[in-house]
Amino acid sequence: RLDHSYHCSAKYPMMQLFTTAAFAAALMSGVFGFSSQQLHASRAATSQLKMSSSSESSRRDILSNAASAAALGISALVIDPNTASAASLRTGSITPQSAANKAAESYQGVYSDPNHPEGFRVIMASGKGATMTLSDGGSGDETYKNIPVGVNGNELSFDFGFKGGPKGVIAVLSDDKQSITFPDGNSWTKNQNKYDGIYKDPKYPNGYRVVRKFRGDTKIINFITEVNDTGNAKDSVFCKGSHASLFSIPTAAFTFYDLPGTSKPVEDEKPTNIVSYALQRPADYSNGVPTVGQFSLEESNSVFPYGTITFPDKTVWTRI
Image 1 (cartoon, rainbow, N blue to C red):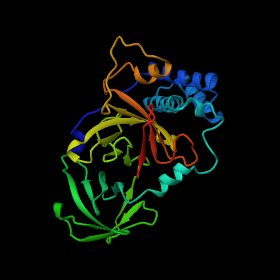
Image 2 (image 1 turned 135 degrees about the vertical axis):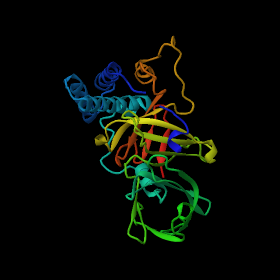
Image 3 (image 1 turned 180 degrees about the vertical axis):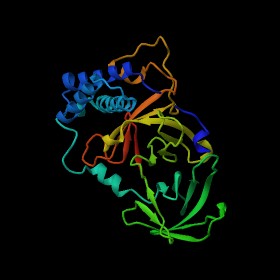
Image 4 (image 1 turned 180 degrees about the horizontal axis):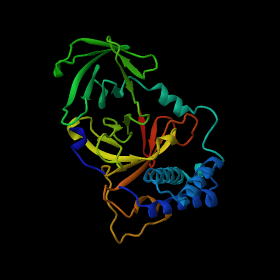
């Protein structure tokens, strides 16, 4: 199964989040003069951290909010301090990059089938058509790969014979490219969890990144990413991760564990600055080495465009 072919997974203890949130608040307010909206978010997160709660869920919400606020500030500082010092990251109207990203969206993506709520369907362009990876979910369910899909304008043809289903089924892609409807009335919804989808990394033009919800038995890990640099499915690596509260979308912090190319810092290695300490020196690596990215669906944000995940090294994954 995809979810168990590679285990990449770090939970930050409360002290680490206190430190990260405090660094972000101090940097945003005292050094670079962040926008009032971001400063308010940071202060709100810090205030929440000070409140006591007997509820485990409340503590998790507080930690998630703090991580999201801290990651927003730190990511912007690492990416471009000059931009971070601007009065606001929002332009008030859709940016050219966001407009281009929205226009480039297609039928490709991660689909949810209401008849199989624990499963997924990933449809990706291949040659003149497309291929599909399908899982219906459930214990012991098989994941089917490289299933051919015909593409003719807004019509997609499917052969479900591989699991005893009908052949030659013609489904229709909606005008907004957000769903596929079948003759029996069933409809698959694209990127239902808002962050899921197929992303492209400009460093690897032949590769792809598939981000989707992780349906495991852990409360810490909640999404999984297929990282592929070559386009050959045999080269895929699967990395688990955790995200901040999705209530913060259109932006949210996403933590990827053990992304290819990352490694745990040497124990006696001293961080070069506050930002590297806050991002790279968590006290607990039990889930893997974390890399924090900023997911955005904001159309008017000049730093984090619509449909992107931006990392501190300036790498930007763009959803297709």
